[in-house]
Amino acid sequence: MKKILLMLLMIGYLTTSKAQRQHINFEGKKRDFIVYTPKNYNSNNKNFPVVFNFHGGGMSHLEQMFYTNMNKSADKNQFIVIYPLGINKDWNVGFEMSYQKGSNDIGFIKEMLTFLKGKYNIDEKALYATGLSRGGFLCHRIASEMADVFAAVASVGAPLPDSVKFYNQSKLKISVLQVHGTADEVVKYEGKKNAYASALNTFEYWKAHNVITANAKTEVIKYGPNDSDVTFTEVKNNEAAVKLITIKNGGHTWPGTDPFNIGYPLGYTHQKLDINETIWRFFSEHRK
Image (tube, rainbow, N blue to C red; front, side, top):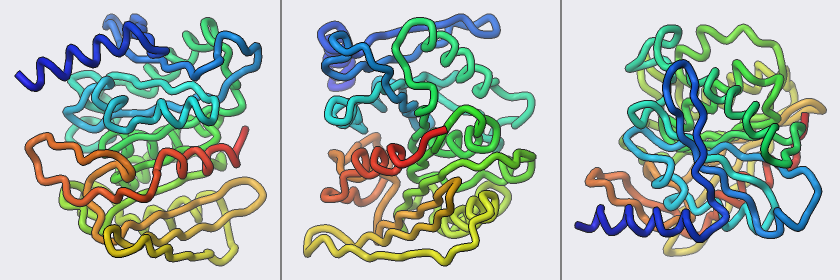
């Protein structure tokens, strides 16, 4: 009953807000996504940055929109948010699905961009991608295959997949933000053999990919007795930046949001770290 009520609330929200359900036909299938335009979009002739926000495995685009609450940040900072829906609520990130023969999610993203360019006022120099879990893994694939289009990506609870590392032939620079909790029991901070790298090795991989030789700058912020410490580690050069945000005792969650109960122990959600604003600050520093 609660799930039905939640869905009704979501549908009601779509009919009264700046969130619009859109779809395209791609490779013989109807592919859905939500487009959220910020306040004052219709009264402003400028082109807006675009953030793709990809859901985790088993979630929907609607759930991702409500869970991450990124629309609030979009209104404040004036950017468009796209919430795509994966086939069977999943993304092709190279494990549990064939990297080359599984769903063509990169092609879907390219087709969405073609649609958006024709219908919305978008800033093509300010395209970004973020996501949680499987959606975060997809961001690493985007970084490897679409660095000519996207200026930066931010992955939450999802380090570099082994398959992305194996197939990545690109030499193009791209800024990457990795966010991960040390107590994540769904996607391990330390990595998983034959699946994905550790959070730290992910940081080192993109640092090397971007040919950044500078020493990392590290800052530890203590948020008080009710929230754990957060460590910010970053390196940059004139072309790109790579940043790792480590949340002590953090779970498989989106920091700064209400805990999301899907019947699985996702762990601790940091309440004082507004990850939407943090991600946007990182994105806003990078353009193509």
